[in-house]
Image (cartoon, rainbow, N blue to C red; front, top):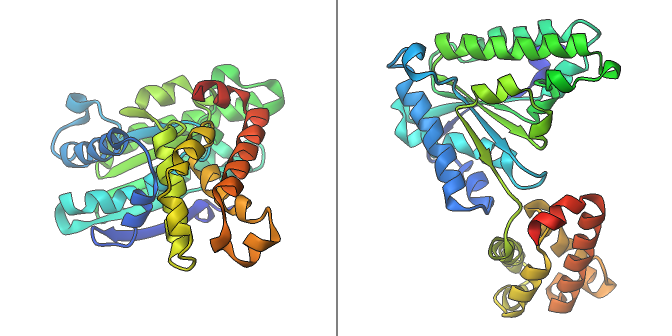
Length: 303
């Protein structure tokens, strides 16, 4: 795979972009969004004005937490949130798929990582426009060197991680208009030197009951545009108990539970508006049971 094929998207986004919907769709505590926005803005506004020796800012934020909590969607929605505060009112967004790099032939990972992060990405943003670079599931390319197993070819792993660190150091000093947002489901798998370069590491946790209620209700209300009967269910007092029963689910699984509830009976398949609180409660409890079996630690954390 060529390095350019690891770039999933390269687009310029304005403050009035429809991309704002991505940010709004993720239900997390306000302080998480505020910290991500503020850290990004601080980096993009301060680093071009001051030397790295003064700020020690690498232009890197790591979003970590369980799968399905909205880390990648927050990162994708970030440029539209900060565009209004930067010169020109536009922010470039570059999305990277690190997995393609690490599937390279033996000995090639280091070279490809260096080429992508140290040359190709800065080249895409050579006009100086504020740029957010998303490294999704970054643990695939910044593997903890201390934990690399012999079966995983530790020499190649070490070299690839070294290349990531070198590129981050280079971009920190030479390209202050770049800001990297890395997402990770497993911070224990990330190299300590990578984490030390993060200007901020922000936990995106499993949603609490009030957030789950909002996620479930917003899904139903969106569907209510086509199936009006769902409006009553979305606003009913029963949603409080259903949200409590949903604790332990991530946001993605909670939304899917609504459709799993509809799929339980032919009647609700043919008429989704006939969905009842009992249908939704049963689907939520079933989903939590599966989540507990697959990820017992998530269930413990939720209780």
